[in-house]
Structures are given as C-alpha cells and as structure tokens.
Amino acid sequence: MSARLSAKNAAVTLPVGGGKGGIGKSALVANLGLALARLERRVLAVDADLGGSDLHAVLGLANDRPGLGELLTAKGHAVADFVRPALEPRFFFLPGDAMIVATANPSFQKKRKILHAIKAWPADFTLLDLGAGASITVMDFFLTSPLSLVVMLPEQPAVMNAFNFLKNAVFRALDRIFRDNAGARAALRDFQTRGRGPGAMKIDELVAAIEKAVPGQGERARRAVGRWRPKLVLNRARRVDDFAFARQLTRWAAEDLGLAIEVLGFLPEDEAVRQAAGQGLPALDLDPRAPFCRAVALLAQRIGQWAGRADEWRAHGAFDDSFQRAATDFAGLFPPPGRVERRP
Ligand SMILES: Nc1ncnc2c1ncn2[C@@H]1O[C@H](COP(=O)(O)OP(=O)(O)OP(=O)(O)O)[C@@H](O)[C@H]1O
Ligand SMILES: [Mg+2]
Image 1: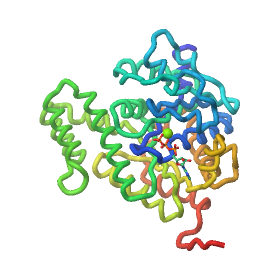
Image 2: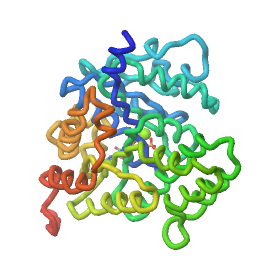
Image 3: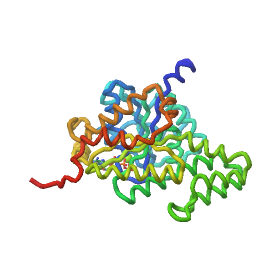
Image 4: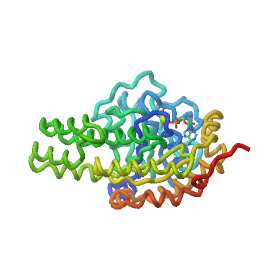
C-alpha cells in the first residue's frame, strides 16, 4: 500500500477501556465489532487484555491461536501472521495472550512498534479490548489513539472510577512528554495525588505549574490534552434516568481535566448478554432483537459514519450537545422515565 493510500485509509482506532473489570468492555468490543462488520465496515478486533484475554470466548471462538502475546514477546512475527477472519465477512480477530503463560511487561518501544503495526493493518475500525485497571500498559494502549472509548456503569462509584481512569490517562500522556523534566514531573505528581473536589488540582492549575517549571511548555501540555477526544458508552443502564451518570462524567472531565468527552450511547442491562456468554455466542447472534443488540446496532450506525474519517472525527470539536443527542437517539430503547417495573 502506498503511503498516501494508507494515510487516507487509516483505520479509526478505538481502544476500549474504563478502569474497572467486568463493566462490559469485551461484550462491547465483540458485539460492536460484529455490528460494524454487518454495516459493511472492515473491522479488526484485538484482544489487548494481557493476562486476562477472553475476547475469543465472548466471540464464541476456541482459544487455539497465538496473537498479541507472541507479537510482544517473540521476534520475527508480523501482525498479519496472527489476524484471522471470523464469524462475519469483514470481521477479523487478533487473539491476546491466552496461549502463553505470562507476557512480560513489554517495554514502551516494543508496545509502540506493535501498536503501530496494528493500526496500520487495513481496517475501517480497529477495536482494542483492554484489560481492567490503570497499569502503564493499559494506559499506553488506551492512549494509542485520540479516539479512545470509556465504558462506564450507571453507579456513583463508577463515575469516580471512570474519572480517575481518565485522570490517570492525562497523567501518563503528560508524563511521557515531560519525562526529562523534574519540575514538570513534580507538578504532575501533585496533580495526580490530589483527588477530585476541594483541594483538587485542575487542568488550568497544572498548566500554570508546568509553565512555571518549564517556561513556554504550559500551552504544549494543554494542547496535548486537548488533542485527545475520549468517547463514553454507558453500559447496563436500566432506565433513562441512569443516563445522568454519563452527563456527570462529562462535566467532571471538562471541569477538572479540560476534556471534551463525546457521549456515544447507552446500552441496556439485558439478560441476553449473559445468556449468550453461557452459550458461547456473541449476543448479536443469540438474539439480534434483544434490547442490548438493538442499542449496539444503533451505536454501530453512529460510529460507522466515521469510517475513513478518523482525522475529521478527532477535529470535530464541539461535543457539548453529544449527551443530549445520544439521550434522544437511545431513549426509545429504554422504558419511559418514571415507569415502575412490575412483575407479571
Ligand atoms: N448490558 C449488559 N447486560 C447484562 N450483562 C452484561 C452486560 N454487559 C456485560 N454483561 C455481563 O457482565 C460480565 C462482564 O462483561 P465483560 O466480560 O464484557 O466485561 P469486561 O469489562 O470485559 O471485564 P474484564 O475487565 O474482566 O475483561 C459478563 O458476564 C457479561 O455477560
Ligand atoms: Mg474483558
């Protein structure tokens, strides 16, 4: 592929994270990936949950192929050696590290090289299913694209978790830039250790502290954070009132971190997801009419429009109304507000 062609056809890379385990990252990657493939987009789903790879199981595939673990630990392999077509025309899967006992904590250089190769693989959308936690490796995978996606549950502690995850990502992104500057790093440590609420260090204060430590670099820090455009999907929502948790995160992230988060959509709590897991099938194949699957299909439509337009999506600045637009689009998939659920 020529450089011009590959730049034009660059995949939209969406790392899917969120800090906590068990919030539906893998369920989202599997089903959103299949839904995008059914909209005739070419999709690469990567199991990037090192040490906890299970995307194959969510997709209903056997755990019998090497993948990312080998790419990170052995020499002489290319991404294309391990990518396999699966389930759907246009859907491709890169397994994780379930075949090898332990993946050493890979160096930044190694991770960067492999991530570069993954992003260069010809797809419209490349989805990275990340592990739980906020380890450096999770963060580096999460930050590999300006369009990363956070999954969150509709609970108060989950909002704090998602916020802390984003804050960790901001910290890691800036820590990488100011690696060699003790003054800037001290400011960053201060930013990270002071939590949210009274006494918190907000982005303006951090930028000022970095500027003081390294004159001329404050704005560079602000721009580096501003270039990053995280997305949000709220999973396991039971009613429209739950949507408010998403708005709360966008407010906190804007106020404290200077991040403009785009709310992409809301996925309902749905027994079909668990049933599908029990039967070794993606939910989309068990029952495409299940509420979760209909919401995933809607999400795929909203995301699918950005195929081939990663730069445009990133530059698309104003997401102030994204919460309202998503709430309007998804409301019909949930019971009307205030309705009391009754058992038959
Ligand atoms: N919308 C939903 N409705 C009902 N159950 C769900 C929903 N989303 C996910 N689940 C269930 O929650 C559990 C965790 O989901 P999943 O494995 O996708 O989470 P994860 O974030 O990838 O977890 P980990 O960090 O451990 O990899 C699974 O049993 C899954 O079936
Ligand atoms: Mg998972």
